Image 1 (cartoon, rainbow, N blue to C red):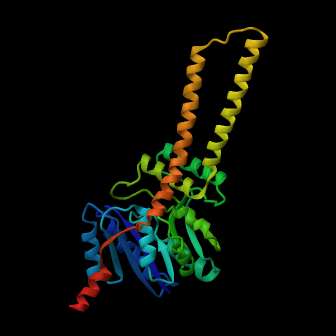
Image 2: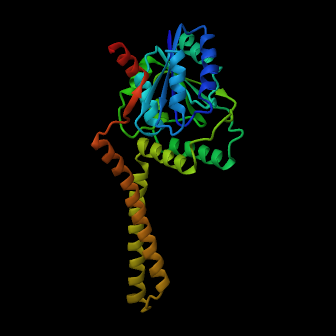
Length: 318
């Protein structure tokens, strides 16, 4: 079997060579694998990541690379890596060594011997991670599983080994706005999980800050659920109902009891409440509309500036 290791990279000059050395050793010792290839995706890195990838490729032609014209984001890098992979088995890994290479043996065993189509790695804990971030992550999975038909396991990662058929199904979903964790669940198949202890990053810094994670969470919710639209509509209905109810109470007070309704502050609060709900509803609708807008424009998910495959073709042509 040929194993393709898809590795998105963004500013990983400090760790990429160590990752290649350690991971390739585990791959060579894997009894289920006859051959392998690395598919490194340089996602518009600003450091010397591309230079390091070219160095690795110079002494190991199995370590291929694709370099984007700019930073398109991890989702685009994952999509590109899966497209450029050639293996019978494909594994998606991060370059920071937080995805333990020793799990590759167990992943391949489950697919080859137990006939699973996909094996995902799930963190048994979030040791070493910010407690607030860990808590919000847990609540995100609880929330999205409650509003979506697609179920995602808490603490799941992008670390996953897949069969060629599974990957082809993932690639058949060619949407511009991608949320890979949801897509992996949506395509179905026979899936297994492996739990592992959380590994802290050895070198470099995480590329995911709070706002990037928040944006990524919103992508997942919008991509796999229309419940926010329903909530927005329900809020509008309830506020209209209570507004009519309050209006009727005021009329009864005036005509039946002769009471003049006072309360300037009540009026101001009502205006702010209604205005806030309207803006919230428009914002939710705008998020869905913006995604439809990007899909309709049909722009490419990524643009390749250079790759090891192109360079090899040019050498042969010369």
